[in-house]
Length: 147
Image 1 (cartoon, helix red, strand yellow):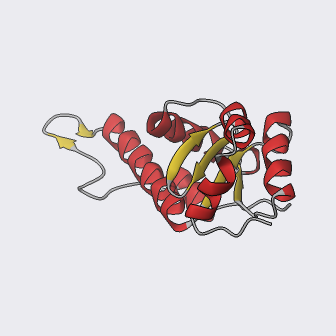
Image 2 (image 1 turned 180 degrees about the horizontal axis):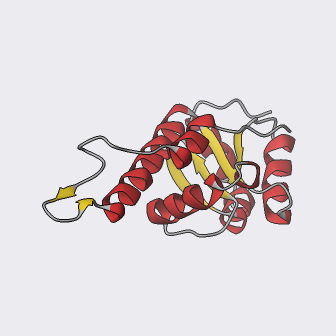
């Protein structure tokens, strides 16, 4: 299963902001670095929310994580192809993306899984849903065809 590198995450991390909505200017100190950082984080959060709303199944993952491999294998067995964002393939942007995911979900670990726009959790939560027979109906309700 291939991974997807989402270019806007990389671009946002490298971009310098001079827009009045992204940096505040005080009378004596010029542009506020804290405001600029917060704006980058907000833009990354917006990009994450956008990707989540556009894709019925998205996994934020790391290539060497055994828990990530386990959920990707489960979805593969179910015949479902998630959008996978491999954080460790994003270079320095992975840290900003990981922090944004933590702010959005409260979860700091991977995999970080969203189905039908809803945060499911990680590997344990996904496996528990599958064991209870609730995962396939959830995937189907989000428009995915499960085989």
